[in-house]
Length: 501
Image (cartoon, rainbow, N blue to C red):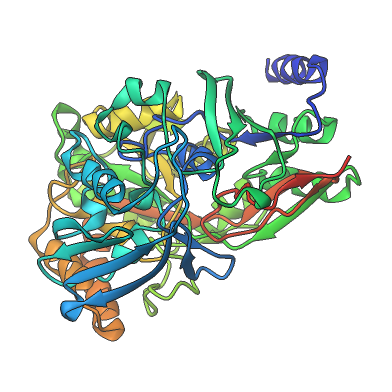
């Protein structure tokens, strides 16, 4: 059944009229949830924001924080205030100028908006104020080391003062950021079309007139469209397509490190769906983990090209906790844990994003878990819908990726701290909270690492998340594409991208 479907999808792509040379066509793995940097939580939206919304701070290829809308910054008052100097002559896409008052309005939006997923990322902010016409001061109740890293992502994206009070669907109809491209049309599940903003402050770095993002969940179809010339850039090429792309002279394959981690999230306390053996009993969660062989999962699903892991940060990350081994498979222990919990077999509703990589992995995990007496009923769900269900507690367990942050606080706090917006399973632990809070409020790197080590010990014991692997970033481009920079966050920067036809 799949072969005719794939052929049909590819046929549609090949039948499409060739795009103009000044249009960049980018294939992404899923449709964004909401094109509002305050509310968004999907990596697909982050990909699109890279063309729409500049940030106060940027991340370079080495993972370093560098200027973008802010030209400089300095800590004041022993870490309880951050002073940022804004770039002159920047305009939003509705023509409004970026100044300190506009920046204050944009950042305050993260705190005033119901459902904001940025509020927790910015930490203990007490006030955001203009410190001069082009200077911004963020005041904190206590030092907060991860703030700079947060401002290098969606929390640092500024919107026009006029748009700062506009939310949800209304914002998406007419967004106004300070990036190089502005939205012209969105067709759900099909395309997002952007056109160049001629008032962009760094216009010389932009070489395309238009950018079209095409959400294509099947990695093989995405790669086939690239090879056929219907796409110019694709993200997240599947490991099964790597060798084919390497051998095709019409395309280039680029490989780089990733900050991402993929994990199983468990609903432990959010509504009726948490009332399951998996949600109630950490022994059942331990049994599920013991049933999984991460090394075999990597070899079978990903041709051995990814890295098995059991933390939110990959090896080599400055906040990776050494000395915590990745556990191997132990079927006897898995079965014993179930018996200890009073169970011979248990059935779990397992939600899976509708992309090739997740489905492949979920099927391997399903087979492994069944041998331990754990039956996973796979529910394949469109990504944005799954994210909404996660927030609402309409899940028992799900598999998903977090694209990773340069500071570990961005990987842990919002998902694990009591009451935070990304904590869809409503996990809450006083011990984990205390360690995470110490890590985010200390400015001493050694003390921070020790605090996060304590937090990880609690989290690995409670298992609200079971981390599985760290992907490697594989991007494909047409041979005519130049200037794609590999940044560890896995996001495609349009600055410098050009087509040579």
